[in-house]
View 1 (cartoon, each protein chain N blue to C red):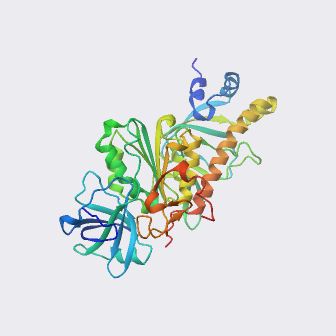
View 2 (tube, chains in turn brown, orange):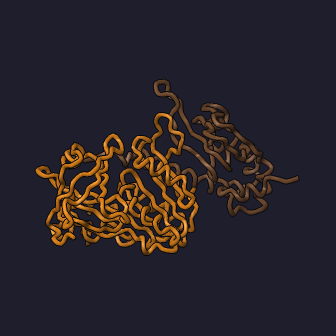
View 3 (cartoon, chains in turn purple, blue):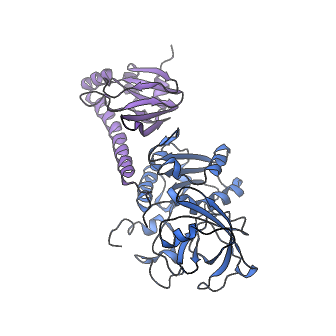
Amino acid sequence: METLEPILAQHPFLKGLEPNYLKLIVGCASNVRFNAGQYLFHEGEEANQFYMIRQGKVAVEIHAAERGSITVQTIGEGEVLGWSWLIPPYRWRFDARALELTRAIALDGKCLRTKSEEDHNLGYELLKRFSNIIVERLEATRLQLLDVYKASP
Amino acid sequence: MITDPMLSYPYRIERVLKETYDTFTLELEPRDAAGAMSFVPGQFNMLYVFGVGEVPISISGDPTKQKTLVHTTRAVGTVTKAMQKLARGVLLGVRGPFGTHWPVEEARGRDVVIVAGGIGLAPLRPSVYQILSQRDNYAKLVLLYGARTPEDLLYRREIDQWNRRSDIKVDVTVDRATGAWRGNVGVVTTLIPKATFDPSNTIAMVCGPEVMIRFTVVDLQRHGVKTENIYISMERNMKCGFGFCGHCQFGPFFVCKDGPVFRYDRVKDFIGKGEI
């Protein structure tokens, strides 16, 4: 039976990961698809997965009563959605909604946390990769906050 | 042909295009043959609104169609606000072209990544035109464009046309989604990892607000583009246009004469320094 291992190996997030770790991770992976408009998760729900996007686009949103849904970011092909599974209290802080047909690999966070506790090298490898994503997103958010395109005479 | 850099030549406004709520494009033609000019992508002109003042505005038109001079600008100061009110037929004074140019010739045979933020797309558009006019001379062509909101995007029809072509990859994002926007949301740097190009054989051209340029350069370097292959366009208080008055001094450079386009490694020690 064909496994998800070759697909995982090709995704930029796991590029270069040692084959024995890939084998471990593949046991926590499943193929998922979301139609346009479908929610991947909602704010406040338990965060038990993260998603490696293979195709499509997902909006990370937050709902404000007076403004409706506000998109703070979009995540597309080759990117990773979600790190709330990694940090207590393991609850989503935003909504995520597919903007178009989206195919992804869902990784079971509980499963990965257990494997990381058993093998700290795997845990460290995953943390390094997530740290890069978190730093990139933090820098992007700071640039967004600077509102650099605002007119100034 | 303009010979005296201090002398403005009269150009007639042939067309005014409203790009966004605060940005507009003027198409100008010289009143007589003496004022005709040729330019290369990246250069700018000094535009004079008679009785109001003169401002440096980059040329945003097609360098292969030099009969008409095209300038896109944002109405933010006294001169540009007055310029925004001008109609077809009105005369403007034009001096130029001034400054250095994008490395369009040097990029032949290589991938070209163009990163534009906000109105920074205007000075880069002539490079896109020139590369597309000689498309076979280049490898991949990627245009990454970020704006504040969907309403702030310039040249939307043209971007849609480029998007439909197979020989240029265009990716657009906005910092804040509004209305029915279904595209990318996030800063322009987030488009860099998604773009397909060979970093070791890429020339990058970057224009936008200086903070955006600095973030973009870091991300291009992070993805393997060599510092010496990154070019940026800078903006300073340019007055004379040819390094005479000193208003636009930037460290050892005059932006009007030594720039506005700089190879990044030449200015990296000065850019971002509050004292300069």
